[in-house]
Length: 86
Image (cartoon, rainbow, N blue to C red; front, side, top):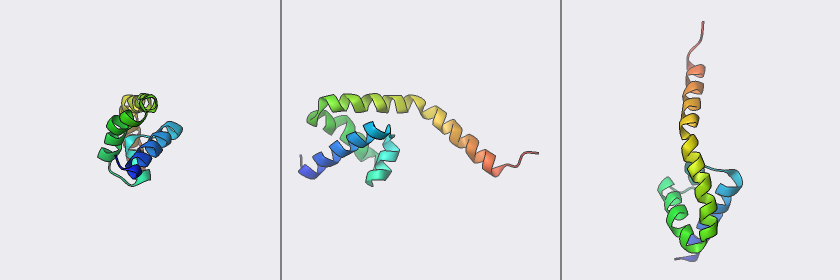
């Protein structure tokens, strides 16, 4: 694995742990695709640092469990801003 990829993987992992970030927000922050973040975290990080991979996996599983709530809140906010209540 190339050094710059390994460095990106570790930076992504640290960022996700520190900020409890989602795959989408990490991808935006690092200007890579969601697929790249997912591959870095689920495959490459496991080879580099299995303990760190386990920590990140817990955060991503929690984010996945909560995504329906975030989606519902986003929809609620969208309709509150576009519909005027009488």
